[in-house]
Image 1 (cartoon, rainbow, N blue to C red):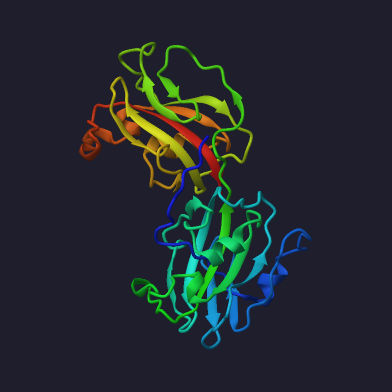
Image 2 (cartoon, rainbow, N blue to C red):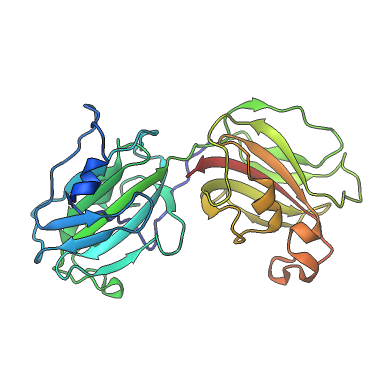
Length: 320
């Protein structure tokens, strides 16, 4: 399966300040000898729980000649690999004023993108590669390794301002589904899989013309990873098509995996209910009658009528 490059638009920043505060550092446990834990960052304090927005205090303007980082909490999951995707919570703080400028915590879901040069800030890339899921890292970056000579006025970062990033490594998504192929009934829509393992469309040659009025979640590949629970932030690849037609209304295979929160009402009912319990590494087909999709109003923008049944293939690439 090919790797898709993704620009982390609003954030490749992480925040969880440096000089780990007492109770924060106490939760680290023993550091693995293979992980570079970095050093405390002078003038920076960070507190709070992993996965939740931290409190960051900057004692006077930071001025660092080169990027510095410290692992505040060391996780135990898979390590971030350069050139591969990872799902991160990020916070950005102005290193001169100490003001928090932008981040992902308040929006409730991390950002997923490729950990590659040119796609994420150099100081953040250097700090997260090789670190395991569950880790929180504080980074102090000079302008050249953050927003560059122009700064980022829209985020309140001037050209001369150092930048503090706090990063929580939430998950390292798989490149694609991993597991055993399931036995699939023949009288269902058939996903067309290309040579790279991506799904390009469904065919309906063997499927009934009139779909069932019940929600169906059909395993195609059975993963063995962490099961999805309500409230989890989950990274997916997917394709959605109107049942019995050629209308593909959304897909991620040609762009990048996407991260959503499951079970909290931000997704259609078919996903919120049908994906709970599905294990990471799985590929499932979801057949969603109208009441489990967009309801009687449909979604005119996506050319979905209120009577349309929808069929999805969903790859669960990462949970948490």
